[in-house]
Length: 198
Picture 1 (cartoon, rainbow, N blue to C red):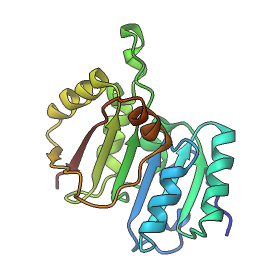
Picture 2 (picture 1 turned 135 degrees about the vertical axis):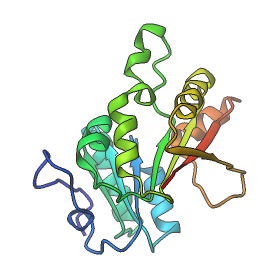
Picture 3 (picture 1 turned 180 degrees about the vertical axis):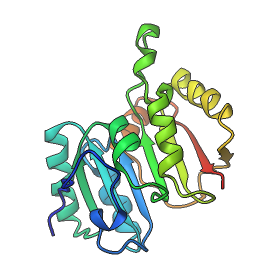
């Protein structure tokens, strides 16, 4: 298995079958996957689903690939690309069952808020395009309260999304290394999930 995925064409929407061979299987995206801890763990929990990790930094892509191989996850791949572009222009339309955005860079300074993914119309419109209508979910975790509230406010203005409950025991959900780090420092992790309406 070769866990590093490179599209043949970066300038059109992909088909699910170009990423994994069986397009009938659910496809989940780990956006900004870091070193791949979450990707390898959740792919091991759900062998019936396929997982594509997305990361811009080469070193992290290589770590994610190694972790997928070590965990023998044939259902996990990693792609090196920028997050907003991946969502807006590359991922298959109505082809993603879940997209995970876990502890993203909060860009805390006010003058940098424009760089936040959750403030990008390109990203938000892309998310509407790629999630399966009626069932597709967006899952967000953040240690930064103001960033989290910013996301809540943004999604409240988009009628194509419905916020769902996310109790701690809803389903198995591995922690990222970032989450473990922040929790060890006594910080709170805020989480929310939304469903793409039909």
